[in-house]
Amino acid sequence: MNKKTASLSLEGVKDSIDLPILGGSIGPDVIDVGGLTAKGYFTFDPGFMSTASCESRITYIDGDKGVLLHRGYPIEQLAEKSDYLETCYLLLNGELPDPAQKAEFENDIRYHTMVHEKLCEFFKGFPINAHPMAIMVGVVGALSAFYHDSLDIMKEEDRRISAHRLIAKMPTIAAMCYKHAIGQPFMYPRNDFGYAENFLHMMFSTPCEAPKVSPILAKAMDTIFLLHADHEQNASTSTVRLAGSTGANPFACVSAGIAALWGPAHGGANEAVLNMLDEIGDESRIEEFIKRAKDKNDPFRLMGFGHRVYKNFDPRAKVMRKICDEVLTELGVENDPLFRIARRLEKIALEDEYFIERKLYPNVDFYSGIILKAIGIPASMFTVIFAVGRTPGWISHWNEMISNPYKIGRPRQLYTGHARRDYPGT
Ligand code: CMC
Image 1 (tube, helix red, strand yellow):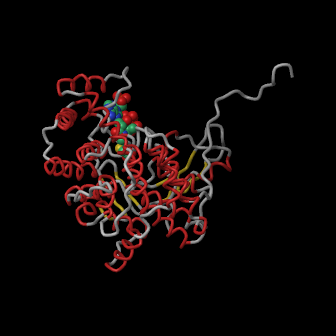
Image 2 (cartoon, helix red, strand yellow):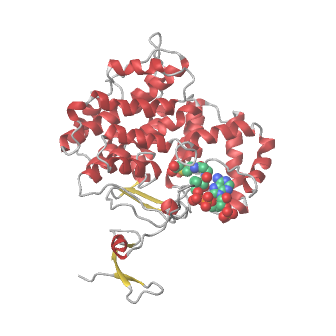
Image 3 (tube, helix red, strand yellow):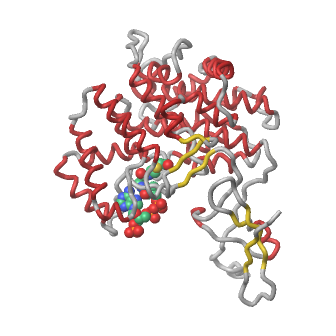
């Protein structure tokens, strides 16, 4: 076999160091720097701009070409032909299910959607104005307190059941966060509803009234979950892997992922989009905000624009844009001032040299924020919905890591602090 190597010459060192080059199935080759430590060196790559932290078979992204594949399947095809639960199965198991496997998986998820009644009591301890992500971090982590019987992470069956529990219970917990905030009773899941339909039911029904969930909105919700299902080694997924590499249980790891997702540079962006649109308030102020976004001395950025990986376009945003149109039409709110601001902002940014030069296109959060707002979901719940959608991704990566040989994740550093010095008076 023709093994490629890279050769590293270091000033003042006689022999160069040979580093193996590893090839993936697609995508750039990777230089294996693992052997450098033995030679007394670490690599330095803050923000992991050039570092592959693991080997994975789940998701492939080509940011320049705007490609996103789950287990090889393009996201556009999954969004059009598949559904969220089938995509969950694909991410978890590596292949699409046959009809019997699909039915069995859906059934398994359906029969795990209820949460333990004791878990409902947790909510009483949270203030009414608690951010739903704060509740999610706590409550999802607390799930581990209820499943001691199936937390042996070395057992495949325990990993499977934990994965199914997480995917099934996330929408229930998410809807409970919302009900807690508005002071309404929790709604139990309904086994005769589909996944997204059930979520909207638990969000918007009350014991007094259960409005029929519009199929268009249920489909939009399902696609929002699907488009968020996985995204390779992003900050929250890497957090789940890092936490998991210590041997922590999957509920604790996913809770860590939820915490990482919360930040406005990651999952918090969809909430930030709506806050920004509110702040702009009127179409006449758009120019002012565009100017601020371009000003190097102003920390303001246009939320929902730009992406660390997609430097051409975000293929999820393309799908989401179409759904956005469908939902706004279905709800008859195309002319709502907030949505008009969003549309104008999108147009101006797409035509502005600053954004074109830097390849700052509307990302998935720009459109998902608008859709969720139109459905009637408050901005504080947006990142929670992202967390629900991302759960199969987190758990698939965790499972992939645990099922293969792995090491505890332990980055090193470039130390620039004081050298050894003595305590005064020593
Ligand atoms: N508005 C104005 N300028 C921007 C923006 C923006 N949203 N994003 C990047 N820039 C500029 C930035 O100032 C820099 O300009 P210059 O080269 O003149 O210094 C250039 O574009 C490159 O920016 P960067 O910070 O080096 O890019 P990055 O890849 O590190 O950051 C990002 C990616 C997503 C953090 C950033 O674009 C951003 O903060 N966007 C707004 C927040 C947002 O929408 N985040 C959601 C990301 S998608 C969801 C997910 O996958 O989690």
